[in-house]
Image (cartoon, rainbow, N blue to C red):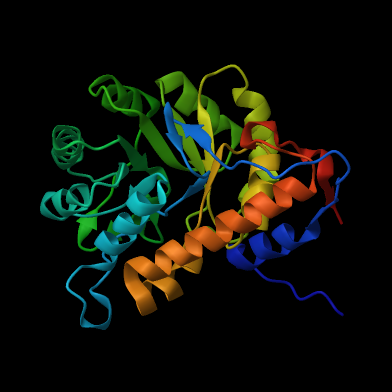
Length: 298
């Protein structure tokens, strides 16, 4: 088959993900346990929800999609993430009981950034963070839902981090340079991501993961990853390449749209069941033990 040149980072990411193969290692293996510790808390799985924004009420149901997948995260005992929203919506997310990290956009209105961080902490958020890969647009700074974004410096990140007692997560890291700056600023975790391909030809997160892992060794910064995570095998590959947890994204939407909380819970269960199966089939009994020794890149 002839190679077709493509600039779509999502397709490039999918091709790279599919090039990573898994070698079985069965003798002396046991049924794996997927429980893991994320930001000091024990969860049943290293699967994370994505930091979605502005999801509607599907099929006329009472709760928004944001509330529904948050309820599913609570009932599945996994860490929940949400994205751009106003404080009243975030209060509804907190009411679900999910342990939730609020990812705030890099608004040009810095007072709004700080207000949303403080509201999250006062409301009982598990953590807070910033979506740095939504700073720029084609005409300069990005405008998202009528809100202008602004550049963020390492000192600004350090200021946000020092102003809160909550774990701080920087979303949208796709280089060793940014990963180190996040660690130097005091971040508790980063999310390695290209935000569904905002930049043409963006590096697949899985490709840069090992370098970031090496650079952050000993820095007490956990590494999460998203983009193209749709199965337990994908999560396994992410963990093997250096991530501590992985977020499913648009792959979660069909279940959410059709069956709400139940659909998301079933999806998460299926992903986690496949992760357990692959772990068991490659000789890793614990999430913390997984390494790249059973991976082969074509």
